[in-house]
Image (cartoon, rainbow, N blue to C red; front, side, top):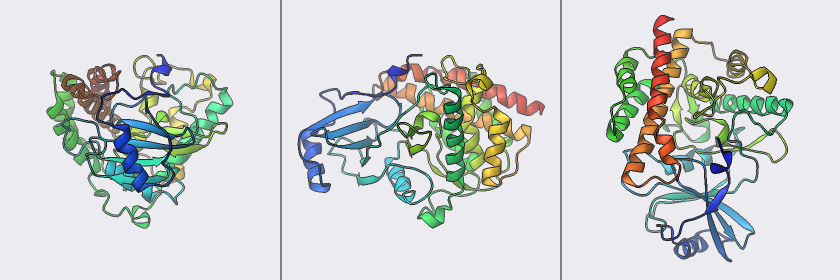
Length: 356
Protein backbone atom coordinates (compact mmCIF):
# COMPACT_ATOMS: atom_id res chain seq x y z
CA UNK A 1 0.00 0.00 0.00
CA UNK A 2 1.29 3.47 -0.90
CA UNK A 3 1.16 5.37 2.39
CA UNK A 4 1.86 8.64 0.56
CA UNK A 5 -1.70 8.51 -0.79
CA UNK A 6 -3.03 8.98 2.72
CA UNK A 7 -0.45 11.13 4.52
CA UNK A 8 0.44 14.79 4.26
CA UNK A 9 -1.60 17.53 2.62
CA UNK A 10 -2.57 18.65 -0.85
CA UNK A 11 -4.03 21.87 -2.29
CA UNK A 12 -7.73 22.39 -1.73
CA UNK A 13 -9.74 21.93 -4.91
CA UNK A 14 -11.10 25.18 -6.31
CA UNK A 15 -14.79 25.80 -6.73
CA UNK A 16 -15.88 24.01 -3.56
CA UNK A 17 -17.99 25.38 -0.69
CA UNK A 18 -14.94 26.79 1.13
CA UNK A 19 -14.44 30.36 -0.03
CA UNK A 20 -11.00 31.46 1.27
CA UNK A 21 -11.91 35.16 1.30
CA UNK A 22 -15.15 34.60 3.22
CA UNK A 23 -13.41 32.27 5.68
CA UNK A 24 -10.55 34.71 6.27
CA UNK A 25 -12.91 37.61 6.92
CA UNK A 26 -14.70 35.53 9.50
CA UNK A 27 -11.47 34.38 11.20
CA UNK A 28 -10.05 37.90 11.28
CA UNK A 29 -13.11 38.99 13.24
CA UNK A 30 -13.04 35.97 15.57
CA UNK A 31 -9.36 35.13 16.19
CA UNK A 32 -6.13 37.14 16.51
CA UNK A 33 -3.25 36.44 14.16
CA UNK A 34 -5.31 35.60 11.08
CA UNK A 35 -4.02 38.39 8.87
CA UNK A 36 -1.79 37.95 5.85
CA UNK A 37 -2.13 35.66 2.84
CA UNK A 38 -4.25 32.59 3.57
CA UNK A 39 -3.30 29.22 2.09
CA UNK A 40 -5.64 26.24 2.52
CA UNK A 41 -4.60 22.62 2.11
CA UNK A 42 -6.54 19.47 2.92
CA UNK A 43 -5.22 16.41 4.71
CA UNK A 44 -5.13 13.37 2.42
CA UNK A 45 -6.10 10.80 5.08
CA UNK A 46 -9.52 10.23 6.59
CA UNK A 47 -12.92 9.39 5.14
CA UNK A 48 -15.26 11.32 7.40
CA UNK A 49 -14.97 14.98 8.39
CA UNK A 50 -12.95 17.06 5.88
CA UNK A 51 -9.89 18.49 7.64
CA UNK A 52 -7.72 21.35 6.38
CA UNK A 53 -4.59 23.26 7.30
CA UNK A 54 -4.88 27.05 7.25
CA UNK A 55 -1.60 28.97 6.90
CA UNK A 56 -1.34 32.73 7.31
CA UNK A 57 1.73 34.14 5.52
CA UNK A 58 3.27 30.71 6.13
CA UNK A 59 3.72 31.66 9.80
CA UNK A 60 0.64 30.85 11.85
CA UNK A 61 -1.05 27.51 11.14
CA UNK A 62 -4.46 26.34 12.28
CA UNK A 63 -6.58 23.29 11.51
CA UNK A 64 -10.18 23.49 10.32
CA UNK A 65 -12.41 20.44 10.70
CA UNK A 66 -15.90 20.53 9.22
CA UNK A 67 -18.90 18.37 8.56
CA UNK A 68 -19.06 16.93 5.02
CA UNK A 69 -21.26 18.61 2.47
CA UNK A 70 -24.59 17.15 1.39
CA UNK A 71 -27.32 15.26 3.23
CA UNK A 72 -25.92 13.42 6.25
CA UNK A 73 -27.12 10.49 8.31
CA UNK A 74 -28.72 11.44 11.65
CA UNK A 75 -26.21 12.16 14.47
CA UNK A 76 -23.22 11.60 12.16
CA UNK A 77 -20.19 13.90 11.82
CA UNK A 78 -20.73 15.65 15.17
CA UNK A 79 -17.89 18.17 15.04
CA UNK A 80 -19.46 20.08 17.92
CA UNK A 81 -18.98 17.01 20.13
CA UNK A 82 -15.36 16.80 18.99
CA UNK A 83 -14.83 20.42 19.97
CA UNK A 84 -16.41 19.85 23.36
CA UNK A 85 -14.30 16.83 24.23
CA UNK A 86 -10.92 18.27 23.21
CA UNK A 87 -11.81 21.41 25.18
CA UNK A 88 -12.56 19.28 28.24
CA UNK A 89 -9.31 17.28 27.97
CA UNK A 90 -6.96 20.29 27.88
CA UNK A 91 -5.71 19.89 31.45
CA UNK A 92 -5.69 16.08 31.62
CA UNK A 93 -3.01 13.50 30.82
CA UNK A 94 -4.65 12.87 27.42
CA UNK A 95 -2.81 14.94 24.78
CA UNK A 96 -5.05 16.89 22.41
CA UNK A 97 -4.72 19.94 20.16
CA UNK A 98 -5.77 23.27 21.64
CA UNK A 99 -9.27 24.25 20.44
CA UNK A 100 -9.85 27.81 19.27
CA UNK A 101 -13.48 28.20 18.19
CA UNK A 102 -16.62 26.40 17.09
CA UNK A 103 -18.65 27.97 14.27
CA UNK A 104 -22.26 26.88 13.78
CA UNK A 105 -22.87 29.37 10.98
CA UNK A 106 -23.08 27.14 7.90
CA UNK A 107 -22.71 30.09 5.52
CA UNK A 108 -18.97 30.39 6.22
CA UNK A 109 -17.70 27.09 4.75
CA UNK A 110 -20.99 25.31 3.94
CA UNK A 111 -21.30 23.34 7.20
CA UNK A 112 -20.54 23.62 10.91
CA UNK A 113 -16.80 23.59 11.67
CA UNK A 114 -14.26 24.17 14.38
CA UNK A 115 -10.73 25.53 14.54
CA UNK A 116 -7.86 24.11 16.59
CA UNK A 117 -4.13 24.66 16.77
CA UNK A 118 -1.90 22.86 14.29
CA UNK A 119 0.31 20.27 16.00
CA UNK A 120 3.70 19.70 14.36
CA UNK A 121 4.78 16.09 14.53
CA UNK A 122 4.84 12.64 12.95
CA UNK A 123 1.86 10.64 11.75
CA UNK A 124 2.14 6.93 10.97
CA UNK A 125 -0.16 5.23 8.48
CA UNK A 126 1.34 1.74 8.42
CA UNK A 127 1.12 0.02 11.84
CA UNK A 128 4.23 -2.08 11.22
CA UNK A 129 6.20 1.20 11.13
CA UNK A 130 8.59 0.21 8.31
CA UNK A 131 10.91 3.19 8.68
CA UNK A 132 11.64 2.72 12.39
CA UNK A 133 13.99 0.36 14.26
CA UNK A 134 12.48 -2.33 16.51
CA UNK A 135 13.25 -0.49 19.77
CA UNK A 136 11.47 2.61 18.53
CA UNK A 137 8.45 0.54 17.46
CA UNK A 138 8.27 -0.90 20.97
CA UNK A 139 8.29 2.60 22.47
CA UNK A 140 5.63 3.82 20.03
CA UNK A 141 3.29 0.97 20.98
CA UNK A 142 3.99 1.41 24.68
CA UNK A 143 2.92 5.04 24.30
CA UNK A 144 -0.23 4.02 22.41
CA UNK A 145 -1.17 1.72 25.25
CA UNK A 146 -0.31 4.29 27.91
CA UNK A 147 -2.51 7.01 26.42
CA UNK A 148 -5.61 4.86 25.88
CA UNK A 149 -5.30 3.72 29.50
CA UNK A 150 -4.95 7.36 30.56
CA UNK A 151 -8.09 8.22 28.60
CA UNK A 152 -10.11 5.44 30.20
CA UNK A 153 -9.09 6.68 33.65
CA UNK A 154 -10.42 10.22 33.07
CA UNK A 155 -13.47 10.94 35.22
CA UNK A 156 -15.92 12.64 32.81
CA UNK A 157 -17.76 14.66 35.47
CA UNK A 158 -14.48 16.16 36.73
CA UNK A 159 -13.64 17.58 33.29
CA UNK A 160 -17.10 18.92 32.48
CA UNK A 161 -18.28 15.95 30.42
CA UNK A 162 -21.05 14.75 32.70
CA UNK A 163 -23.94 13.92 30.37
CA UNK A 164 -21.64 13.51 27.36
CA UNK A 165 -23.08 10.02 26.99
CA UNK A 166 -25.16 7.52 28.93
CA UNK A 167 -22.84 5.38 31.07
CA UNK A 168 -24.71 2.08 30.81
CA UNK A 169 -25.78 -0.10 27.88
CA UNK A 170 -23.21 1.37 25.48
CA UNK A 171 -22.74 -1.62 23.16
CA UNK A 172 -26.48 -2.33 22.93
CA UNK A 173 -27.15 1.28 21.94
CA UNK A 174 -24.28 1.18 19.46
CA UNK A 175 -25.64 -1.97 17.82
CA UNK A 176 -29.04 -0.31 17.49
CA UNK A 177 -27.57 2.96 16.19
CA UNK A 178 -25.24 1.37 13.64
CA UNK A 179 -27.90 -1.03 12.47
CA UNK A 180 -30.05 1.99 11.62
CA UNK A 181 -27.11 3.80 10.02
CA UNK A 182 -26.22 0.72 8.01
CA UNK A 183 -29.78 0.22 6.78
CA UNK A 184 -29.95 3.90 5.83
CA UNK A 185 -26.77 3.60 3.75
CA UNK A 186 -27.20 0.05 2.43
CA UNK A 187 -26.47 -0.23 -1.28
CA UNK A 188 -26.17 -3.99 -1.82
CA UNK A 189 -27.06 -6.90 0.51
CA UNK A 190 -24.25 -8.20 2.74
CA UNK A 191 -25.12 -11.55 4.27
CA UNK A 192 -22.57 -11.28 7.10
CA UNK A 193 -24.04 -7.93 8.18
CA UNK A 194 -27.54 -9.41 8.24
CA UNK A 195 -26.24 -12.23 10.45
CA UNK A 196 -24.50 -9.81 12.81
CA UNK A 197 -27.58 -7.59 13.01
CA UNK A 198 -29.61 -10.63 14.09
CA UNK A 199 -27.00 -12.19 16.43
CA UNK A 200 -25.41 -9.30 18.31
CA UNK A 201 -28.39 -7.96 20.34
CA UNK A 202 -28.85 -11.29 22.17
CA UNK A 203 -25.15 -11.98 22.79
CA UNK A 204 -23.61 -8.79 24.13
CA UNK A 205 -21.09 -8.82 27.00
CA UNK A 206 -22.12 -7.29 30.30
CA UNK A 207 -20.67 -3.79 30.66
CA UNK A 208 -18.55 -3.72 33.82
CA UNK A 209 -17.69 -0.04 33.99
CA UNK A 210 -18.08 3.18 32.03
CA UNK A 211 -15.44 5.65 30.88
CA UNK A 212 -14.75 8.39 28.39
CA UNK A 213 -13.92 6.59 25.13
CA UNK A 214 -12.47 7.76 21.83
CA UNK A 215 -14.34 5.45 19.46
CA UNK A 216 -11.63 5.41 16.76
CA UNK A 217 -8.39 4.97 18.70
CA UNK A 218 -5.73 3.77 16.28
CA UNK A 219 -2.18 4.62 15.27
CA UNK A 220 -3.04 6.97 12.39
CA UNK A 221 -5.19 9.11 14.69
CA UNK A 222 -2.11 10.09 16.71
CA UNK A 223 0.38 12.88 16.17
CA UNK A 224 3.75 11.91 17.65
CA UNK A 225 6.59 14.16 18.69
CA UNK A 226 9.00 14.75 15.74
CA UNK A 227 11.83 12.78 17.38
CA UNK A 228 10.40 11.14 20.53
CA UNK A 229 7.99 8.25 21.02
CA UNK A 230 5.52 10.61 22.65
CA UNK A 231 1.99 11.43 21.53
CA UNK A 232 1.41 15.17 21.21
CA UNK A 233 -2.24 14.95 20.16
CA UNK A 234 -4.96 12.36 19.75
CA UNK A 235 -7.20 13.51 16.90
CA UNK A 236 -10.53 12.59 15.25
CA UNK A 237 -12.84 12.54 18.28
CA UNK A 238 -16.04 12.32 16.22
CA UNK A 239 -17.15 9.02 17.79
CA UNK A 240 -16.19 9.86 21.36
CA UNK A 241 -18.72 9.40 24.16
CA UNK A 242 -19.10 7.85 27.59
CA UNK A 243 -19.28 4.11 27.16
CA UNK A 244 -17.68 0.72 27.65
CA UNK A 245 -13.86 1.03 27.77
CA UNK A 246 -13.41 -2.66 26.92
CA UNK A 247 -15.26 -2.11 23.65
CA UNK A 248 -13.04 0.90 22.91
CA UNK A 249 -9.91 -1.12 23.66
CA UNK A 250 -11.13 -4.07 21.54
CA UNK A 251 -11.62 -1.66 18.65
CA UNK A 252 -8.07 -0.37 19.15
CA UNK A 253 -6.82 -3.97 19.02
CA UNK A 254 -8.49 -4.74 15.69
CA UNK A 255 -5.16 -3.79 14.11
CA UNK A 256 -3.68 -7.00 15.53
CA UNK A 257 -6.55 -9.04 14.01
CA UNK A 258 -6.58 -7.49 10.51
CA UNK A 259 -4.29 -8.86 7.77
CA UNK A 260 -1.84 -6.42 6.21
CA UNK A 261 -3.24 -6.44 2.67
CA UNK A 262 -6.18 -4.03 2.25
CA UNK A 263 -6.67 -3.60 6.02
CA UNK A 264 -3.23 -2.35 7.13
CA UNK A 265 -3.19 -4.91 9.93
CA UNK A 266 -0.63 -6.90 11.89
CA UNK A 267 -2.24 -10.36 11.86
CA UNK A 268 0.24 -11.84 9.39
CA UNK A 269 3.41 -10.09 10.60
CA UNK A 270 6.26 -11.28 12.82
CA UNK A 271 5.57 -9.06 15.83
CA UNK A 272 8.59 -10.24 17.80
CA UNK A 273 11.03 -9.30 15.06
CA UNK A 274 9.30 -5.97 14.55
CA UNK A 275 9.39 -5.13 18.25
CA UNK A 276 5.60 -4.77 18.42
CA UNK A 277 3.87 -6.35 21.45
CA UNK A 278 1.83 -9.52 21.08
CA UNK A 279 -1.91 -9.38 21.73
CA UNK A 280 -1.92 -10.95 25.19
CA UNK A 281 0.89 -8.91 26.82
CA UNK A 282 -0.45 -5.67 25.34
CA UNK A 283 -3.94 -6.42 26.63
CA UNK A 284 -2.60 -7.38 30.08
CA UNK A 285 -0.64 -4.13 30.36
CA UNK A 286 -3.77 -2.14 29.55
CA UNK A 287 -5.88 -4.06 32.09
CA UNK A 288 -3.30 -3.49 34.82
CA UNK A 289 -3.03 0.23 34.02
CA UNK A 290 -6.80 0.72 34.21
CA UNK A 291 -7.47 -1.65 37.08
CA UNK A 292 -9.91 -3.74 35.07
CA UNK A 293 -10.57 -7.47 35.29
CA UNK A 294 -10.20 -9.42 32.08
CA UNK A 295 -13.22 -10.73 30.20
CA UNK A 296 -13.87 -14.28 29.01
CA UNK A 297 -12.72 -15.37 25.58
CA UNK A 298 -16.38 -15.56 24.54
CA UNK A 299 -16.93 -11.93 25.54
CA UNK A 300 -13.64 -10.79 24.00
CA UNK A 301 -14.51 -12.33 20.64
CA UNK A 302 -18.00 -10.83 20.88
CA UNK A 303 -16.42 -7.40 21.44
CA UNK A 304 -14.31 -7.98 18.32
CA UNK A 305 -17.39 -9.03 16.32
CA UNK A 306 -19.22 -5.90 17.50
CA UNK A 307 -16.31 -3.62 16.62
CA UNK A 308 -16.02 -5.11 13.15
CA UNK A 309 -19.78 -4.76 12.67
CA UNK A 310 -19.47 -1.07 13.50
CA UNK A 311 -16.48 -0.62 11.16
CA UNK A 312 -18.44 -2.31 8.36
CA UNK A 313 -21.39 0.03 8.97
CA UNK A 314 -19.05 3.03 8.81
CA UNK A 315 -17.48 1.72 5.60
CA UNK A 316 -20.95 1.30 4.15
CA UNK A 317 -21.68 4.93 5.02
CA UNK A 318 -18.55 5.92 3.09
CA UNK A 319 -19.77 3.96 0.07
CA UNK A 320 -23.16 5.65 0.26
CA UNK A 321 -21.42 9.05 0.15
CA UNK A 322 -19.43 7.86 -2.88
CA UNK A 323 -22.64 6.93 -4.68
CA UNK A 324 -24.28 10.20 -3.62
CA UNK A 325 -21.25 12.18 -4.80
CA UNK A 326 -20.51 13.74 -1.39
CA UNK A 327 -17.41 11.71 -0.36
CA UNK A 328 -14.62 14.05 0.77
CA UNK A 329 -11.72 11.70 -0.01
CA UNK A 330 -10.67 10.60 -3.53
CA UNK A 331 -9.91 7.11 -2.18
CA UNK A 332 -13.31 6.76 -0.50
CA UNK A 333 -14.51 4.06 -2.90
CA UNK A 334 -11.63 1.80 -1.88
CA UNK A 335 -12.64 2.27 1.76
CA UNK A 336 -16.32 1.70 1.07
CA UNK A 337 -15.69 -1.53 -0.79
CA UNK A 338 -14.21 -3.02 2.38
CA UNK A 339 -17.62 -3.09 4.10
CA UNK A 340 -18.28 -6.68 2.99
CA UNK A 341 -14.91 -8.25 3.99
CA UNK A 342 -14.95 -6.41 7.33
CA UNK A 343 -18.45 -7.73 8.03
CA UNK A 344 -17.34 -11.24 7.08
CA UNK A 345 -14.42 -11.02 9.50
CA UNK A 346 -16.87 -9.81 12.16
CA UNK A 347 -19.06 -12.85 11.62
CA UNK A 348 -15.95 -15.04 11.87
CA UNK A 349 -15.32 -13.75 15.41
CA UNK A 350 -19.01 -14.16 16.25
CA UNK A 351 -18.68 -17.84 15.30
CA UNK A 352 -15.59 -18.15 17.51
CA UNK A 353 -17.57 -16.60 20.38
CA UNK A 354 -20.33 -19.17 19.88
CA UNK A 355 -17.80 -21.98 20.29
CA UNK A 356 -16.06 -20.51 23.35
